[in-house]
Amino acid sequence: MTNTNEPDCIFCRISRQEASAEYVYEDETVFVIKDRFPRAPVHLLVIPRKHIARIDALSSGDNGLIVHLFEVVRLVAATYHLEAGYRVIINSGADGGQTVSHLHVHIIAGKCLGFREDAAP
Ligand code: 5GP
Ligand code: ZN
Image 1 (cartoon, rainbow, N blue to C red):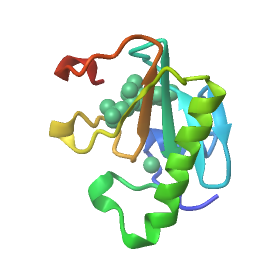
Image 2 (cartoon, rainbow, N blue to C red):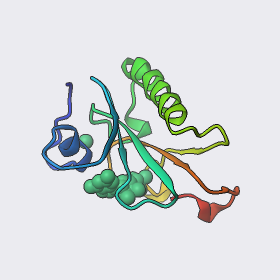
Image 3 (tube, rainbow, N blue to C red):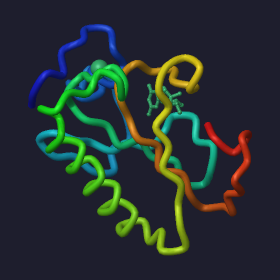
Image 4 (cartoon, helix red, strand yellow):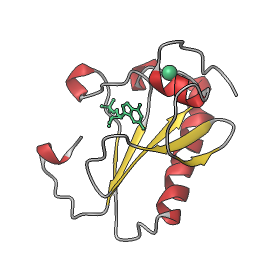
């Protein structure tokens, strides 16, 4: 377990098992939980254990982690039988709708998703 070290970050706290969550998948570097306030029948969060505040805070040293993050997206989508499709969202910064400052990927599925601004979480 690496760099899950922001004391007050909720996703770091979940990774350190100081806060509870409903786990769907976990490994050394990435974990997946159900969103606490789901916006659709399937609403999962794919989260690197490393505290990276947002996309802009990524460095080239994180390239392998990002590839793995999307491997886990594919794995979870297959596990949940999301062959009909799903939406992946990364909010970045306040104007991007980011409310938790620890990079995470939303997987949203289970209803027909139109391409509408208000369809995003
Ligand atoms: P953001 O708005 O930053 O893109 O997404 C943050 C997401 O985290 C929101 O969808 C919110 O419902 C979810 N969330 C916030 N706090 C918790 C928590 O303590 N547990 C879980 N499982 N999800 C959370
Ligand atoms: Zn964090």
